[in-house]
Image (cartoon, rainbow, N blue to C red):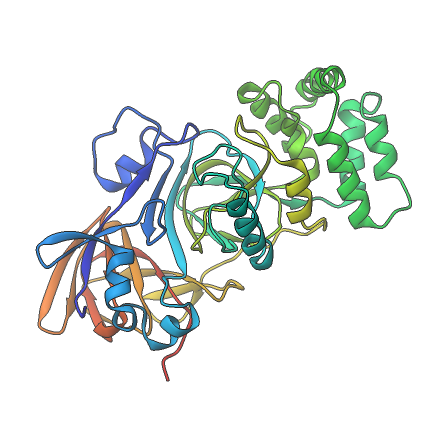
Length: 400
């Protein structure tokens, strides 16, 4: 397997997806259904297909046949002959669930436990779809809104006092307690997620009414109203009061480690993560929420949000520095001058603008907006000529 090939990828049609964003990027006609994610990689739920020897072959099958040629010797050994990342386009027209992803040990233990209990992988109450952790990086293509990590406790107290001090007295007492900050955040969230139905309804009613009065004061109140429109009975509408609000401009990114609460609210982005589909949900969803399991996974730490900016490593490529051993995201911008790239591990390139020729050995491949290609490690080197922008996923390893 020493040739660059075009990938055929699966689009996931989740209810929160945009009807038009992914089709427009791919140059396709909209399906009439919400199209939320395009998956590029080898996850068993929706593996990419590669045309090889006259037939469409699932990428995991091809990797199994040629692990070192595709992954490179170092990555094949380090990641047990598996492609360690999953590359996505994510198009959020409605908010995604508040969620967190398990750490490596938690994922392995949870996957084994649910298997031993005989819970089907497709069961609605299944938490662990695989045995892997899921750190991830999201890079904005359009302006992109999200929630990321807990706010600092004094800020949470201030925001709650503005829209529901009386109704949320129990939670404010927790926030004002002398426990450690981590315990304060844990018991505060647990209290919100285990509210009795009548009290939850009253809190939501008051919070929405007060937020409407204060729309011009803080962005958080605008998001409370927006979330209420989609999830009128979900206490997760209060998340903008206790999670940091993030707005990414195109080209900016965030890194999400395991255990960090987050939610994507609106926008089109590139997402790169460890090869996993493990999600523990905490609100803004009709799907299964396992509160005890979520509490075990979450890291109850207040953070300052760090925006990840691209770092130039050449005239044509910039990387997004992230603390992940499975993946590296970069953006490649080419012009009329031919650009040369080396390959140490399996790369997937997605063209998001323009068109170009990708040349390798004695072959070349024409690539245009919306196409994605697999570059095996055995290619060693390739050249791109033409005005185009690519997002590139790779494994951050160096061959010996």
